[in-house]
Length: 124
Image 1 (tube, rainbow, N blue to C red):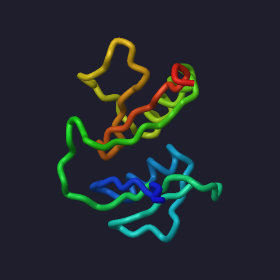
Image 2 (image 1 turned 30 degrees about the vertical axis):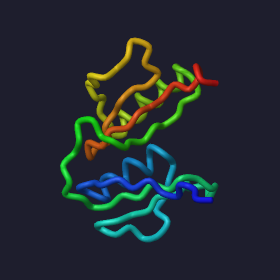
Image 3 (image 1 turned 60 degrees about the vertical axis):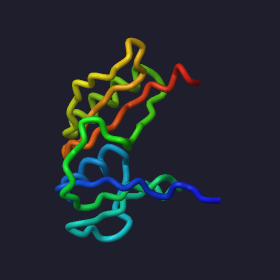
């Protein structure tokens, strides 16, 4: 049976993107970081999805077909994580597809890659 091992994101500045995602997720490089590639893994050694960042010249998509969903336990944790991520360099995205009852907040990393912070309390 297959399983997801890594999510790969294209970035224009690998060290800058790696610095953001290492702080955001508590990840570290699995090997020495290259200027065009790095594979990030959980710092505590626990199994988990790896995040690979590769140098890309592809333009950003306003509505990307693939993105990361980061889970927070409830609305308070979601709000705290959004503020923490913004303090690390993420930006709030004026998302035109928000529903009235949206349980997610759309952010962009310093590279402009969109991701969501989800309040999972409604689905628990």
